[in-house]
Image (cartoon, rainbow, N blue to C red; front, side, top):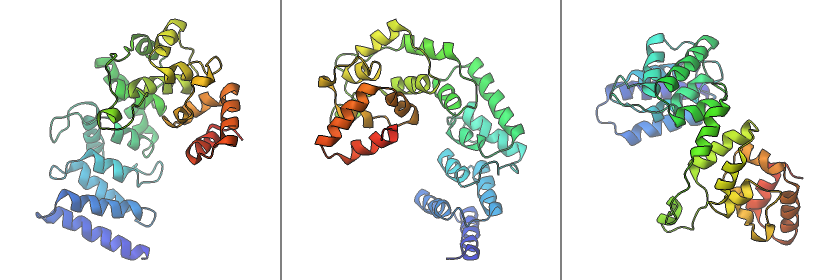
Length: 281
């Protein structure tokens, strides 16, 4: 299908969304899936028309839709967004949505950050900083720091690590609660550590000692060179696959030697794939 045909279909579909009252959510999702798949052939103006409609639509009110559309734009290409639409999105993310009064989280806003111009980038940065001062949100702090929208604050991260409370002894992971194997990963703690690894932050010894007591996974993660590898589960390297966790793993000679020996004896494509992503060769 050529670009002209794709754009004609996209325009017709948007007109249908605007006028038709019998469409259901799954119809909209199918249309947006088509736009995403053909994004390289969809004209910038057509993408912008979709974005402008969904950011102002009360009927099809979904931040998820906006994220999908924003991801279709090229870097620095969303400069035409009007101030009205821009502040609608800011309110959705950081304050109260103009359509429903809820706060929808910052995912769409951080997606927009990479696609807009320097002026709006500065506004997003300042609005996030002001929002955190008025009412701290770890979700906002984490994403904005991870994506380098705001500067890293060592004190805030150290405070959250120091105050992290391990789960109760009878804690069951989400996976285990639904019939799967027990998962040693605590998502919030791994987010904290992901930032610590990204910025190569030195975590206090008393905090490391406390976190190591949670389970074997954290005992290994926070002390790879002193860990007893007779207790190691090689699947641990696959549980949280971010480049900052991989970078931290790449510093350990003991881990490297263990995995190299393990893969000589055992055929495991999942672990082999992560082994090379860590940077071992």
